[in-house]
Length: 116
Image (cartoon, rainbow, N blue to C red; front, side, top):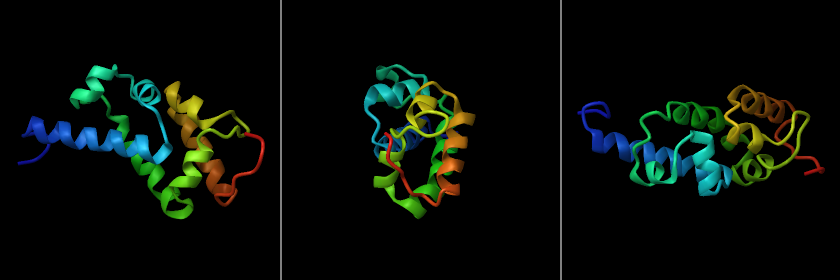
């Protein structure tokens, strides 16, 4: 029985993914809710069926985490880059800009520079 067949399992998987994103980037609950476009009650209940971007975001961040570590990602997400802060793109649901910021981080070799 998979996620689609078992709603409880699906909610637990989505909740786990949401927690993973929150921890990986050091997001607070409000930032996570804005990024996923859900209210806190939906987040707490695990009913994130609409949050299809969640597994995509985690997949995008997987390589960055392996190469740079979560501590660097937590700093990076709040550091101003050439197109602004990645956290602003994420919470503004501008996922292409967030992905571009990740690409820029990778191109620089996962080194953060001053100017946050």
